[in-house]
Length: 380
Image (cartoon, rainbow, N blue to C red; front, side):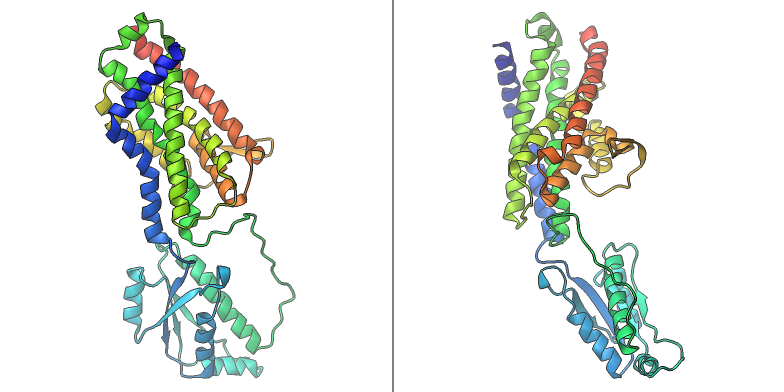
């Protein structure tokens, strides 16, 4: 009965603050739509700028090969644009309107023909232009370099003594850059619980009602359990909205939604645990929306939700490397979501992340309880 009363109280408080609740529910879907506008659509196509100073057959053949290169799903890999000068090509690369630019020298065909005839003259050379600030350039450069090398080897009738066979571990290959962001963006739906959970705890101190809670028979367990259940419901709603948004934008996961929901709900408990730690140092709801942004951004950027981070391994547990960022529960949430959505993994295949989320939840809960008891309850 007390637990039911606590859940009802927490749920009503969240409904009253409907603006914050709406932000929590719509944050991840909003970013999914936004990222889809930037990186979604069809398969990834790289913009290639070509300045051809050569009038021979080899340069025409190379450009034709690049135009006909196929990517995933037999899609066009390059969108080729011709340029009449080097300066316009450089300008477009700086603007990132062109991912990679190549300049074919005027003697390219002659030197290619000479190599084909067995001459020992210097090889034909093509100049690449790109910006290291453009994350698409390195991938595009690899594809173009492969096309150039293949043409040269075919002309010289060279057969390599070894070949490469590439196998991807993911069951589902990302169709475009947007699909690579989806698991991390869905994990943001769990992260947003940090605000509503912290606000629910801090509100008692802000409204000077902590003494009433201490005098009541509710108890700390029922109070926190009520918040956990309420935030789990909110997290489930946010995850469902985010998942449906991704599906509506054309994303097709390899794994089942049930595993995502289970991991997400468990992760929401970890967010409540972290919220208890954060709430121990805050006094008002205003503090939650200002100072509370600091732990929010730490979790968002250092968990690997927004972009992958290098693994700074400290030690290994049952074949799983453990690094500094593994101290954040959201790191394991994002990792589990990625395995489920892209690798088609089930709960039994993400057991390590599941256990780590549960273990970290307990650690943060104990730490939060001790801090909250010392800093807030004892002074109420």
